Length: 120
Image 1: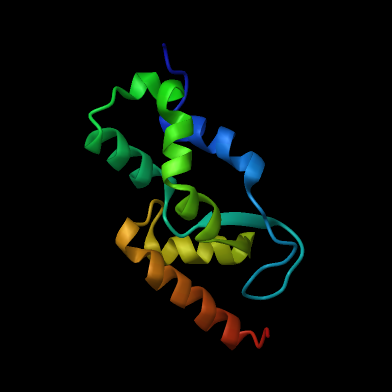
Image 2: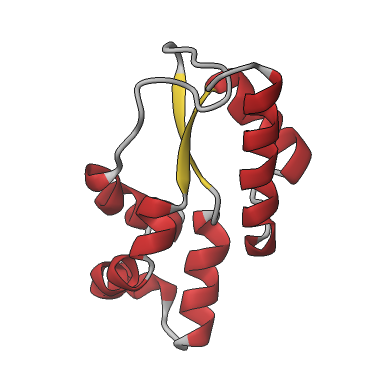
């Protein structure tokens, strides 16, 4: 298969049908320009999975469902809805593709920001 996009996009396209994006920013309560954030960033999750299982990334469609099932928790449970501004702020601190080891730090950051905004 000749891939036209990054393999992560093939995973995201299939998985996003089951995303449960909230109706407001977890930090400030805004209801406009909302983004869905994965605390366990998809890119390193997918690339680690490919390397660990010695898979050919060109065959992404053949193992996409298995990946989603194996990483269901990271894809659907360890997520948060943020307004675009707070999403950008989070990524300015943790980087574009935060390391998997930063997931708990990101969660803590969100909760600290939430407290600062007085959202209960």
